Length: 263
Image (cartoon, rainbow, N blue to C red; front, side):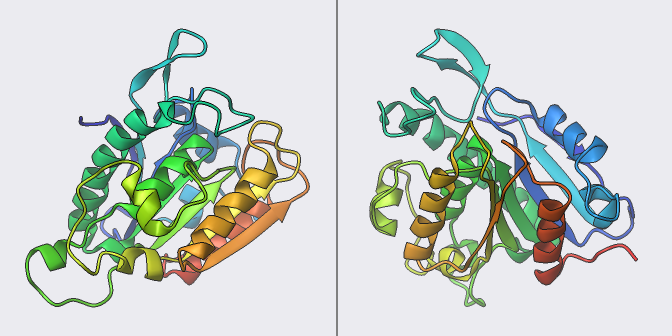
């Protein structure tokens, strides 16, 4: 399955240093997410993320239209959910779509890594269900260097960003969590991505769609896998990115991972 993409090229076209692959939420579209980030999600300087990081290529994959079984309607979604207020309710419905989405996203991530010059130049980000999907995509990234029999530095993404997100199939070890999707894994050593990728999680206390407790569960799950997780909690912002403080924090995190900020 090949996903559609909305792409925002670097504002400095002859200098492409990093790529952010950003996943939209359930029922949304890649174009809507890109537009929202461009038009009205601003930092304390009044800048969008696109303005702040002019050497970044922004890639917004589009989720497939899938049946929302509870409502008997077709929505763009990375996987189906029966009950957004209790993610474990009929949890088995999530596995099929999540497996297909992760397979497609792995291809996008590796393709973009080849374009920009390395997996460590890729930031995988997502909001809401997009964040939950990005997490599982990261957990299933394979070490292409090991496949080729080459020695390499520890493999890592440039970063993982989850906003208003949760952990699908929580409670298991790293191995058990991977086994849920039944995807073929790579050779020994693929845990490098998990151990070495820094994580930013942001969640608003007044989020009435994905409760902040689910964000904390995601935080604890990733820390249990040995990941370095920066947790940011905001009083206001609803089911979105807190602005401007939350955007400032994302900017600081990405800049700390080497993404150049506009002067």
